[in-house]
Amino acid sequence: MKYASFNPLSPHVILHGIELSHGLSLEESLTPYHSYVNRVYGLRDLEGHEYIAKFYRPGRWSEDGILEEHQLIIDCVNAEIPVAAPIPDPDGHTLGEITAVDDNTETDYYFALFPKRGGRLFDAENDEAWLRMGSLLGRLHTVGRTGKAEHRAICTPAETTALHIENLLHYNLVHPELEESFEKICREILKEIGPLFDNTKFLRLHGDCHRGNILDRSDKGLLLIDFDDMMIGPAVQDMWLLLPDYVNRSRRELNLLLEGYEEFMVFDQKELRLIEPLRFMRIIHYIAWCARQRDDKNFQTNFPDWGSRGYWIKEVEDIMLQGNVIRESLTSAGLL
Image (cartoon, rainbow, N blue to C red; front, top):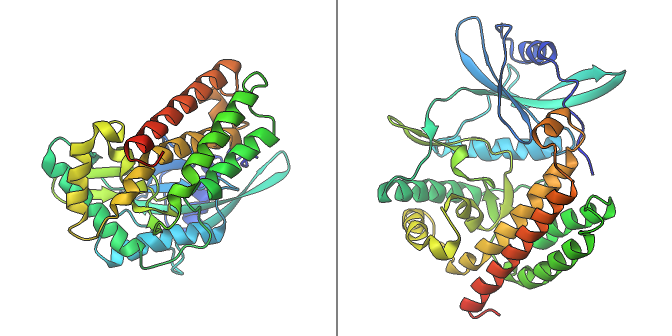
């Protein structure tokens, strides 16, 4: 349960690989951008054009899986939906690959090059902003429902969350003093929320649609970026991360989102009961993501306490709290 490391990926390897793949002449400097999962860099060619290069974490997605991400973005471009799209190389390929060597070990890295786009992070300052965001998601999902993605994650407890929990336990990553509590509460929640996803329509989603992945350009409107977590799942997955609080405290914002959304897509109101279960699933997803890159030097620097007793005490407490929130929401909806 580990991803390969980015440690062998040097600036020279990055710049040389992009120059060869895209036929560019680049300046010798790189600007690292904050990214939890991949490695993202700003760079510029000798003519002053600016780019963003994303190097995918090895072992996370297959080549086919990344190309399915790119296909959704291209489908959005064709539908005139504002997204940051990968730049094809001279042969028309949007996905490149380079090899780096460290301690006589070769590691292959997939990468994509994007044009740099300006804008401030989206902040819903008024009702109009929520309506705009809802409309953008509605447009996105009209495209998402028209295609398939057979190599991406399926957003259900059984397909994703249960496997994360099994791996954490199998590899003895939970602190021994908290392992029993962690397993017990997780299995209880999985049993309660699993049936809620039955008979739900799934489509291609952005998957990680929070405010940090939406740029607000004063002259051109909203722009969706970073489809790295693109998945198959219920439409509400692309909505709940935008809400300022638990769903029962965000009714106004949610209603505005849905009002904008339904200009383009009908929304199934039954999906609202999935929001708090999806929050639990994201907690587990985040823990599993940390576990997979625990040997990465950059991760160890940024998360020095990961895996400690104190870390697991907090995680188990958060999961228990979310379990209570789920039960309260299901009880109020007459589902428990």
